[in-house]
Image (cartoon, rainbow, N blue to C red; front, side):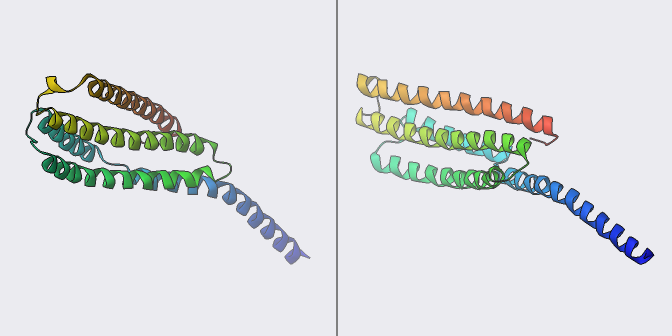
Length: 191
C-alpha cells in the first residue's frame, strides 16, 4: 500500500512538473525565436557602412561623376547587391518573428513580433524607394546633360514626391524602432 502511495505521489509530481514546464516551453521557444531573429538584424557597423556606400552613389550622381547610362546602370547594379543581401537578412528576421505570431500564450512576444515585422517591412520599403529614387535622379540628370536646372518640372515634381514618401517611411521606421526599444526594455530584452 505504501508503495502505491509513493508511486501515485511521484506520478502526481511528474504530471505537475510537466504542466509547469509545458507552460514555460512556449515562452522559451518564443524567446529562442526572438533571439534568433535579432541575430539576423544588421549590426550598427553594417548599417553605417551601407549608408556610407549609398551616400557615395548619391554624391556621384549629383556631382556629375556618372556621365553616361552604362556607368549609371553599372553603379546601380553594384548598389543593388548589398541591398538584396540586406533585404535577405531582414527576411530572415521576419520569418523568425512570424513563428511567434503562430504561437499561443506568448502575448508579450507577439506584441514585439508585430512591431518588428512592421519595422522590417518598412525598412525594406525604404531601401527599395531610396534605390528607385537614385535611379530616377541619375536618369533625369543624364537626360538633362548633367545639369539639374535642365530637368523638366514634371520630373522634379516626381522626384520630390518620391523623396517625400521615402522620408515619411524613414520617419515611420524611426518611430517603430523607438516603440520596439520600449517594448524590449519592458520585457527585459536588449535592443
